[in-house]
Image 1: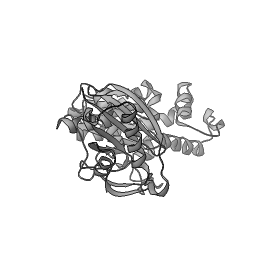
Image 2 (image 1 turned 120 degrees about the vertical axis):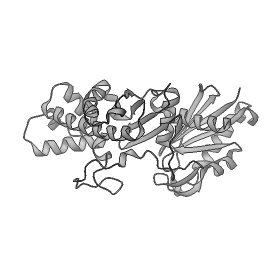
Image 3 (image 1 turned 180 degrees about the vertical axis):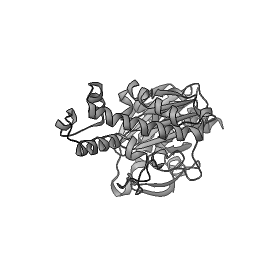
Image 4 (image 1 turned 45 degrees about the vertical axis):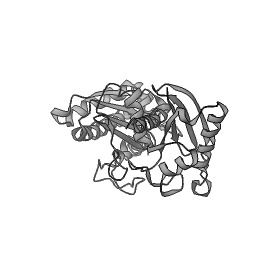
Length: 315
């Protein structure tokens, strides 16, 4: 039996997990992400933690098939990182650098893509060959699996679905510098923005008016209580989601769409709300799609990262 590591590198913490070859997570822990001095100590810290784990448990390197890592930025199929703004990183080959530090084979991918691979392998996409994974959090991220393979794209930015343009008439600027991106409407931040605009444009009484720090959860909760303004905002949200996912599915034709991130905690009400709009906009031959919620939570990145290492070992 071989073993390996799946690493989910975030802006504040690094999640490290130790797996056996079947994909069973045996142990996991976290270390802080040191982003000072343009993140120069991040990889040495990861390497030191992995080496200390192996030494402490007297595990020989010959038992380790490799190490996979998800990175918050564009990474191509060869491990070339193309700037990670949150970490202060420029352009370099992470596979080579981390391998030199650990003495182990390394395979890297974009964090959203890697989380998608985790859900595909052990979560909501199990048993499928074609899957779209969408994270609905502060932003909108994605990962696409086609015929069992993760889509990296030519420059490591495959499945940046949060920056497809959904509204050409938008005047507010997205974080990417463009206007009208999916992220501006379908993220947790986006739905709160739409609610605030609705409150400004109306004198209608709403439970949302009395909240000083409005959140995505507040809007869904108010909708469940029958709050008219919240329901109007949610209906607009479902329409944007349905149109956006219909466009993606026309291109990818997946068997399943897996929704994760903070907004997905709304549960079935989210799926039930967007489906009528999805059916309205999708091409008929791409309409036979199952919608489901992510199953692995915060562990998806670690599972997917290990799957990268496992696939590289068996390649």
